[in-house]
Image (tube, rainbow, N blue to C red; front, side):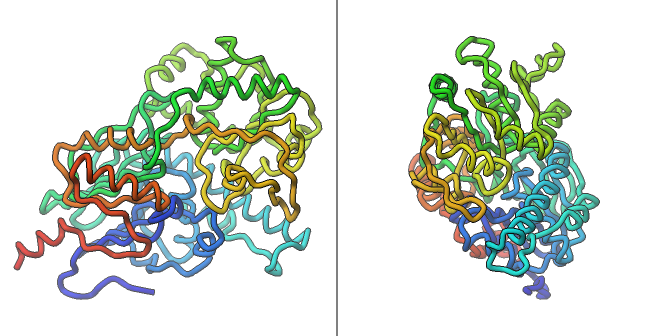
Length: 480
């Protein structure tokens, strides 16, 4: 494994170990004389060639890191932490209080799904590995929690020698933040956008502006498109039409953020009489826990959520609301017929209870599978999005006869115009902008529009590339 440089003067560098040319596995290593900090520690998901990187030895020595700073709790930004700790990392993990709370739900759930999938594969004998093993276990996850050091928004803290960090609201999910590293001697800054949220969305406050950066890392998940403005109307139409056919609406949804916004929107549609009153089943213990957690972090609320909480109303429940916590409850749900809404994880159908509902209902043309979030290449969600006639689950192929609908207007990711809106908050151009967390097309589109409209020095980050930080080069020349 590479180890920290032992030369007298180490030129600061930035290395992209994930989320460069892809939307998964976010890891950006910042190294300077006196410090090594990892921005995000994400799990690779989607394509097999990416998932295999989770099993490989890390390209840096986890023991050499001074700290990890997380932008938020989604697994593509945090899910590698148990492996990092298992391989020797013992430093602090800095994040917001909301992120720390979510990690205590998301990481155990991820381990549980991995253990469950390995056990199922061993029982059915469809794995190429004998025995099939989980990537990590619940015991590995437990080693992460003592290292968490929650920090408040807008309150700088020392992250390593000569550098302090500030977290600002990103508006993506509960606890999500943009990350600023500031070198105390020079005052120069590196800013990582994290995953940017949107303006005027339910529950969460808008993204906070950032005024300065010498080096900027900006996400590009939807860097080549604009979200539709009629997401609410689209959702109402899908539910109404499916109910009229006597079918069920199956919504694979991320337990953090997407489920809560869906529930909020569904309740608004019910109260306005825009959809028939149907039973809404939340078949995800994690989503249930997360919804309760959302009610414990007022620092993240927008005005409407804050007012609802003050009024004592439950803003995150529907009229006919059913919480499916146990496996037996989930199995019982498969016996139900008629119009209903089932919301279950995982959001890209890489695992979780949604797979059992799809096996049961995907071949029935009365039903609808509603995709409400990003679907990474190599996932079942992307296969459905691309029109696959069959979906493979638990070693079996299931015919796709149900309707497949897509609503991208419910996305928690900023689109191109919203990313540009966030960038407009900078008082001066960064010396260098690196576009990260996007497939090749969206990333290049965003880099191009930033260059054309703002005139900023911008390029798409290359996977596993190491670049010299321009803020560091100036300091080096000054020292000489």
